[in-house]
Length: 199
Image (tube, rainbow, N blue to C red; front, side):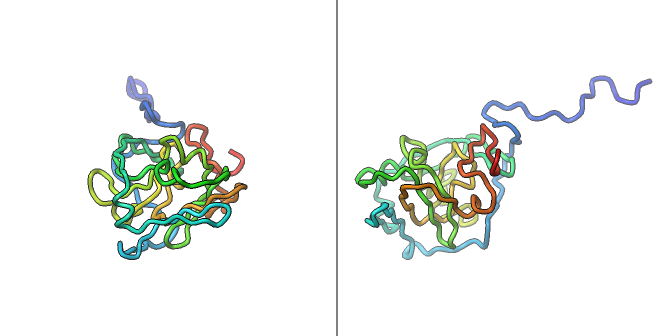
């Protein structure tokens, strides 16, 4: 009699459509942060776009809520290897925010309350690829998940979707943000497993 039962093949990696290589599927929403969770009163919230020449365009919470919003359903992928499929968000497209901004910048640095930063190429914020999201699953975005508003760039690893976002600085050259300076990949494509420098 064999030691291994007939038909036993060990634990297999999940084969799920929409799951990038090296990822596993989760049905909850893990909370991962680089520091303490800031609590931002809505009357102090402001989002500012700064061009490479220093010109600024900004919105307070009331002005931001008056902008055209979109409902999107997307998959999200964390560099720590979890993926959550079919998540629903509401927010303002970066196409809307950048529509009247004059700039030749090819790169951006995203800024958050609390000092967090992450770099994102300009082309990854445009053409329906990115939003400043303030609702998740029909509810106001919880502070632990980046509320009142976070960046949402679902085609990149989730550390690029900066929590507690308060602005985007447009830049002529690429520069590393918080995690990139600590050894994470400058771009972060989950389909190419660009987790760390050299991947």
